[in-house]
Structure formats: structure tokens, C-alpha cells
Image 1 (cartoon, each protein chain N blue to C red):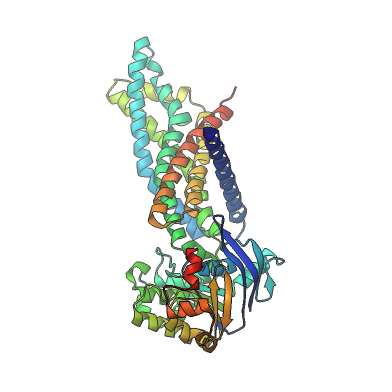
Image 2 (cartoon, chains in turn orange, blue):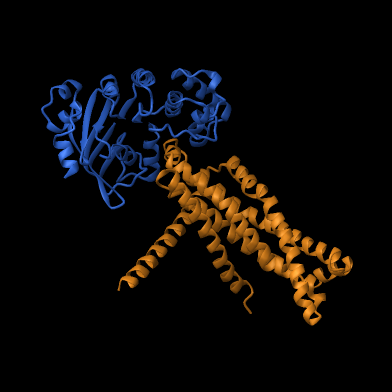
Length: 257
Length: 252
């Protein structure tokens, strides 16, 4: 009975949190889409969230492509299918690994930064101060971040796809004795625009969910430094889980036959 | 100017305000006294719409928040400024950007014009232009209060709320800040609600005093009335007695 009550409470709590998240997101869109717009804030977030995430996401993608090439080569050589390696690398990078690895790195870097920044503003009454200065926190704080997540992660994933393929190419050509021209030909041959676009669509969802978790948990921070620490952890964990769940749902929808 | 009837606020399932009645006239300075945890700051935040109310009416500048549109409420709230307990300055912005914030982002003024107004308001609170480009982390507690006050004044409010303006300041700086608040409020004819435990501050700024206990205003009157009151709760608070009805009820 007790265990059932715990499960019931947990389920209700989860449903309530999801509902609040959805309301928070719809409120942000409803307020953010109408003027006044804070262009400087949006630009600043694009740089902080997008441009400054490029090194860590680029590096991760390049190494992921390189490792993928090495591992696949070992596996494929067992049944003489090494020639499929370029195709495998490009399809894995564009359809799955590029968006997910970039999304998870983005959640760690950006989700944590947003939650900590907004959480600190909340516990030091800076968000209350915004309201008293006739400034809507949804328009000034949350909308620029969610918009930056929505627009910059697809761009980052596009670059990550290229760097991942480049990582695979370098390993294949300089370590596994593939011909460079042959590798590029195989890479192009089976790749369709749909593979790349589906990854970019996924990443737009991942970007919004990461920014949403950072803003939502930050805005609900209480209890000083310890509270902000908890908030940051919750934001990163939730956005990582959301990315993996969304990945499954979107893959089912986008690649369903 | 402000009228509050039977205001009830609950937070986390706990009733904080249980029926507050309060009025503030134009140009009047009201001080709200009360023990820690009696909901004084929550009262100010609920007036500003930062904390939702469960029951009661709030009327600011003739606008009843229960019947008015959101635009009317927003316009009424524009006439209210606030100095927060820890100043709540935006730490990523410089002093002048903090002061001009409401003008630039709230009122959409040209940043150059807003900077001029900000520098003017800074001089009103005795802040030198040389601090204009400093960040809040480079300021002392007293200077942060001044910046907070200049920021609240920048939007030319008709009412200012002061949430424990002398907390965390040494007695001399506290006295300077009180004098500054008193001078600024009286010179500009602004009405004010001040929350404080500091009796020196109270005697300096109050036209009228309200004593909050157990979620209700249990006494209001002038400073003279306060000094001669027989109300046992307020008497214990003023005499700082460790035993009495305030502590009995809290422990109960």
C-alpha cells in the first residue's frame, strides 16, 4: 500500500511538473512573439549559447566520428564489409549521433549555465526587480534563451555533422588506408537531404527542451546557494533525459515506414 | 493611493497573510513593523503582484486588481517603485545601466537619454558620476542601497516600497541611508511603505505605523500613539522583551 502511494505520488508529481513546464513554454512563446522585442538580449544569447558552445561540440563530434570509424572498421572487417564504413559514419552522424551527442553536450553546458544564472537571479530577487521596472521576465530573460536554443543547436549540429564525418575521414584515410576520393564518393552516394534535415529537426527540439529546462528550473529556484545547486543539477538531468526521450519519439515519427 | 482589504496569501500550504487591511494616502509615509516571519515582505510582494493572493482586494491608484484589465494593472504598477532588502541589483550591468534599466527596457527610452536621467537620479542620492561604470560587486552595501534607490526613483514612481532599507548596514551608513530616504521621499512628495525592525529608521521616516502580527495588522496609529500604546503585542515589540504575548503565541 505504501509502495503504491509512493508510486502514485511520484506519478502525480511528474505529471504536475510536465504540466507546469508546458504552461511555462506556452507563456514564453505567447509573450515572446509579441513586441517589445529585446534584440540585444537575443543576440547576446545567440553568441553565448551558440557560438561559444562550438568548440566543445565540434571537438566531441570530431572524436565521435573518428571512434565510430575505428569501431565500425573492426566490426565490418569480420564479414568483409569495410567498404560500407563511410556510409555508416555519415548516416550515424547526421541521423543520430550528431544531434544526440551535440544535444547532450549542449544540455551540460547551456542548461547548467541558464539554470544557475536564472536561479541566482531568482534567489537574489533580481527577477522580482525586473517586474518592478516594468520589464517582463518572459520577454527579457526566457524568450531570448529559448529562441537561442531553438535556432543555434541546429546550426551547431550541422557543423558537428561535418566535423564528425571529417573525423571519420581522417581515421579512415590516414589510419585504415582508405582512398580519400573513394571515401568521399561513398559518403555522398547514400546520403540524402532527409538524413541531414531529420537530424536538424531533432536538434531544434533538443535546443528548446534544454533551454526550457534551464529557464524553468532556474525560475523555480529557492533557498540560496544550495537551492541553485539543486536547480542546476535538476535542469541538466531533466534536459538530458528529455533529449533521449524526444530522440526516440522523433526517430519513430521521422523514420516511420 | 493604496487600499488593501482582507488580503490573504498562502505560500507552500501555509497561511502567511490572514486578512490584512491597510491604506496609504498620497504623500504619506507608512512604516510596517512586525517580528521576523510575520509576512511583511510577502505583503509588499503581493501588492506588486509578485506573489499571488488567495483572497482580498488590492486597489492601487484607483485600479481594483480584481476587476481591471491586465494593461490597467500594469499601468497602475508603473506608479510603484521598490528598494529590495539586498538591493537586487543586476550584477552583470554597471551602476548606470542598473539605474537606467527600467527606462531602457520598461519605458523603451533611447539609451543616451536614459543615461542622462540615470546620472541625474544618481546625483539625487549623492552618488558620484565616477561610480557610474562600476559593477555592483565593486560597491559597498551603502552604495548598493543608493543605487537601488536611484533605480527605483528613475521611473518617477508615486509610491516606493522599502524592504528593510538598513539591514546589513553599519549604524552610521544606516543613518545616512535613512536620511537619504527621508529627504528623497519628502522632497518628491512620494508616498512610501517601509518595512523595518529599526526603530531609529521608524521614528525618522514614519507618518503612520502599522503593526503586523499573525498575518493581520493588529495596530495602526501615529508615532505618538505608538509610544503611549497599551497594546501588549506592540509594547513587547517596542520594549524588546523576551517574554510576552508575542513570544507566547509564536511558541504556542
